Length: 94
Length: 134
View 1: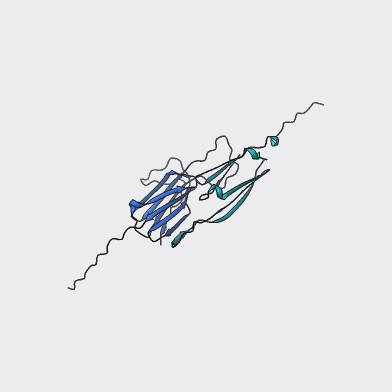
View 2: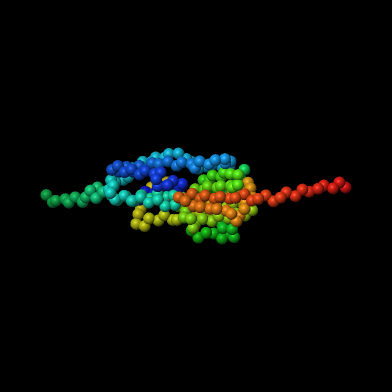
């Protein structure tokens, strides 16, 4: 499965991705550039730290996770744990 | 103070000559920051999903128009299970508070944030107009 998030203005160093069984946690912070001697006319962007935990529908293999960051969008590709795949159970005629 | 001309979000945004865009995509207002230094006006606009070659910036007199087309995120073979934000284009129009020197405008797009540096124009020398008493 793929999880995508919009994180404009954040560099990959500012974000931590944690994976524990079936919970994916994204944490990070966005710091403003300190500007000297400016006259602010409009300020709409939010700054500060953020954190989000997502419950995945199945357990994921932590060795097969891929995370890509492009144009402000973070994409995390996760693969289901093979042991977690549904197993077919045969019914034996008694 | 920079004034904002509000763009109404429409399902099918009209282009200038009245024709309609073929594929209706939502158009969002990117959150922006505008500040003024001694020599420049700096505009920062958040447009995640927009590549540097998909941005359109036009400045006519004091009206600045920013347009960004985002890449359609079609994950082939996947089924969408949960959606919190929509894929869409970005557009915003501002009326700037100063005249700008158009030849020296600098624009960069990094991590989905457009950074526009607009140098203020040298004010034309004021001409003193004499009043002759009749």
